[in-house]
Image (cartoon, rainbow, N blue to C red; front, side, top):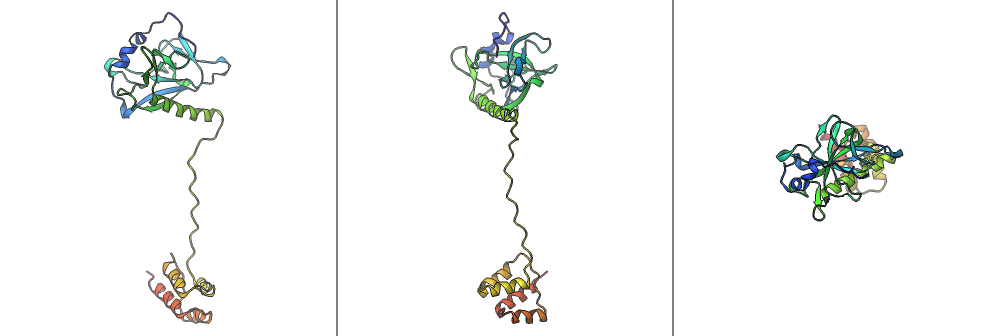
Length: 240
């Protein structure tokens, strides 16, 4: 970010310390807001930080990937969520290259940024700032965590990476076909014990067993035991 132009004394800037130390309004749902520049700033096509919500007087400029805090309201109703006017959003920023210094405010075109939420757990008033010495502020851990997560998402998008999706669930196993007389004969001839074949008959999800007289004679001819045939007849008798 370029340094702010000299000579400007923002009303917000002159009361920055008081603003940060005096309790403000609790944030809705325990969230504050920040935003990162998404404008393509290659070719020195920087995003402007304006003095006001209208007009073209800029005090600084920002590159893609730089992130800012939010502010809205005033006095007791001041909050760390974006105020929107004339297509612009009201931001808070730290002027030094290492994201530190005194807190300043400006306005940016909303189309130049993408907004993200952060948790309010680092500060009772949901401030995005922490202190790094007298009169020097930095972004606190809650803001940095949300900012870094947002930047990772944006960098994937800018790199043309496909969006992350949840891993697909494994395909469902095909439904087992109904147990038939042919299956029972095959199980019996495979050398399985009567107990195992009977258990299969009892536990099969569905069946199409034929227990007609001719079918029973055919089963006996194939060597199916009486115990297995008895289980087949009981299963067939239990049909709804």
